[in-house]
Length: 572
Image 1 (cartoon, rainbow, N blue to C red):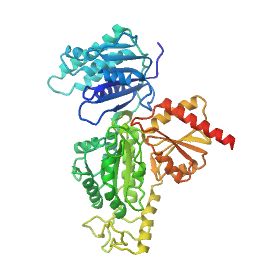
Image 2: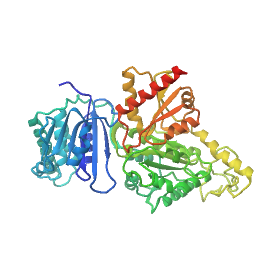
Image 3: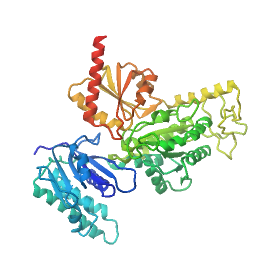
Image 4: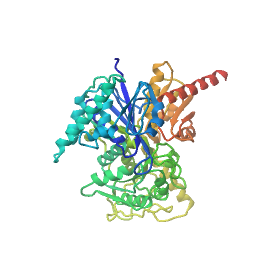
């Protein structure tokens, strides 16, 4: 059978049945032997139960998107089968829990008694290993890959580890045997190639947390809210040691005001939230902008407004992130597009906050927060970490004087000043004089010019039409773009995670395009409206389902818009 470059497996059922564990376990086993992997999961907002699915894409080459069609669907109940069966490709296989429901023989469905098979190993919790073994047999993944993973995973130096390893390996074998008897196959996974560099498999929220700690974060204060809570729990476990502090606040209002205080005291400070919490932080963010205090706010976007879709993905907080407070405010915004970029976005955000002395917003999203992906392990020795520009002079310091960035005094040291949320003069005293308001407003906005070092991607040539996604839509858009090129379409590619301020050279190039198409997960077409305000002929390709783009759908919409533009150009 001809080798297939990658395979997609989806595990679907009720929350708590082990779907996420199965997908992530399969990803870990595959990445350890050299495959590229990407997981994606979606679930309801309740703690337990409700329709849930997790999927993993495994390939011999880098994975850009979760995948459009399923090679294998594992349905833990009838509802999961009914919801997801239409997404199984021709030639794909459905494995279903025969203890829950039955199907007529159709040549591509196989019933297995998940619970009964798991109990036969002596470990009733081994259902996920049963289905992992079944998938491995369907794609020709060698048993030793999985056994090596199980042995490493459960060799923890605890009593009973050997029995757990034995039961899980038996469960893998039982799953393989059932598929083997059926004769089903969906192809053969290519041989893995271990990279010549160290790599890590990590989720987006954890990657961001690791990056923040590596960049010298001192203080993290947050309030639990999906899908940002894992950043708080990571910091509680890992932001430790002298001068480090993590705290679970009683509200988002307390969180933002607390990190503003920490920034005023000379600490690198950060919080993370989602859309509803970000709304509550508005006044505190305005204070940090007005008083010019460094801090980082992470908004892990979900469907909105209000409670909206708390466990689904969306890219609808961009306009709020740019202008989160009343009055004349426009904040720096960084939006990572991959799990790897989540790490580097954290470093960049903390650096930017220190450099221009103000709040920086990072826009992640639910899809990235829960996705696990393997990539080269960052070399921490090569990170550029910027420190606080401190003042060590005498008292009477005029920190807000003129337009030049001023060093920040640390409270208790010489050079004290008032960090005032009202309009103020050079030393921070309140003033309502029109001239001072003009001067201070111009000062605050002029500092954004210090943040024009963002990098960007550019591919192809001087074609009149280009694609420019942002955030987590990068992966599906990049896969769609590459396929369009292979099929002969002439189109360009641009991308940056530095949304504001945009790299000046990038903006210059975008303004020369006849049409810039922006795939984004919102109704309003938010990023294209921002680009249009800056002189770019941009139009959005929108989706607001709570799910990421599918590559095939995106390709069709890009091609349709490009042809429409070309017809208009000929008519004119």
